[in-house]
Image (cartoon, rainbow, N blue to C red; front, side, top):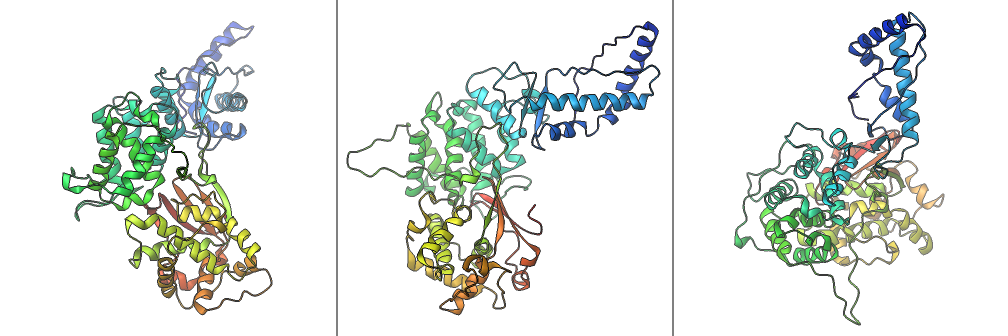
Amino acid sequence: MSDDLDIGLLSTRIRSSDAEHAQALAGQVRQLADRQLARALDGAGERALARARLPAGAVVAVHKLDLQLKVSADVPASELAAGWAAAFEAGLARLLATIPPGDADEDAPAAWFADAWAAEHRHLERRAAGQPDAWWALDLAGDDDSPDPLAPVAILHRWLARNPARALAAMAALARSDAPVASLLSADQATGLVRALLGHFARPDTPQATRTGPGADSPATPPTPTPEAGTLPHLQARLDRLASHNLRLSIASNPAQRAPWLLALLLTEHPSATRQTAAVLLQTITRAAAQPATPPTSVPGAPTPAAPSPAPASAQSGSPAEEPATLTHPVCAAGLLLLLRPLVRLGLLPAAENLGPALVDLALTALRRVLAPLPPGERAVAQERERVLLAVFAPECDWRERIALIPVGDPAAAERLLDALIDAIPGDITPAPGGLRQVFGTTPAAFPTAADSRLASLLLRPGQLRVSPWEAELAWPLAGIDLALRRAGWDQDPGWLPWLGRTIRFRFGDPA
């Protein structure tokens, strides 16, 4: 629940056969509201949400809440405050337990959302659809001191300041919806938002500029691109496909208004584009936004174009009123994510133009090498168990196909990259407790080379992977700490990785 419990209007009606007692109690209630009631209500809102089984971070607005409290004559002020708070907590819990999230019923006496993001998301949907602002909007969707906190441009910039990675995912979700979201911003506002997005998610154009990410103070300002900056054909093709699959972006909007939403879609579905400079991305997105959106055409006998790469099943959320989809999955090859920091630190990260496919090839090659001792059927099943992990490591692949059937595009390049990473694995690494047994059972795994054995010791580290569309946290038991990896810095948090579209964290301890 929001930190503050704000009661806009508090009125009381006292029923008593003794008029003198009623007047005295009325004065006592007025004094109570001025002083003691706030202290008595401390924590009552959170407890009411817990009793109603609402998410801990839910935001709630209530039109009216009727409470009844029997009070004896000459009740002490402290008992009156405690009784009022208890009645408020119970009454609010009963009310919220009967109301679904969102604002489907506009006549409901209350509205609640999983968090401020969901409330603001719904508010933007209403604005895009031309609906009047909901009665709850100012209370739940405005948390800043700007002149118009409910203005779409204010909300979108507030999202970027709050958490850029989640802001990008939320913008992409809006762009995929049926709402004509491009009409939310004027051309000038959209241009400013594009520059803000590039400041957070694109490579700086000059050595002096600094990249920002979640938790950074302010984005680097990308310079205006020159015509010589050029575009990249593979990005242009991806943008054209995105535009053709999101025709609502073309409704009642000019190219500048489409640009930030196309950019959000591009960077969400193809995060490796963040390895390009701001000038190149801006030139590319400007050209794509200027193209009229046309539905994709099909040619008889031609192959059907691939569908947009989906987020992992665990990362797909339903209604914006629902709690953000953050689910936990057991994984056996969790050590795959330990390769992320060395990829960057050793200068092995593939070039931006080939980064997405190269990460797919690397993940599949590494996983299949450590699972090679298994019989074919068991190996295929073991690969399926790591589907969510693979989607975090290589988010640009469509992982809906059976993992065993996904080909490695460039096997030779993947083997060379993997061998270079294996050479860097600390020589005194030890297998994670129970890691090999969980995959191979009691039969000892027979690896053909010492390098494969060392790779298995790194990758086969069972853990719990907690995933949302903008972050992933991997939890290992304390017994999984490896001093060799710790000394070499391999198990330090990778942090914000724009080219994966997520913040990656490692944690050792109780996964609960």
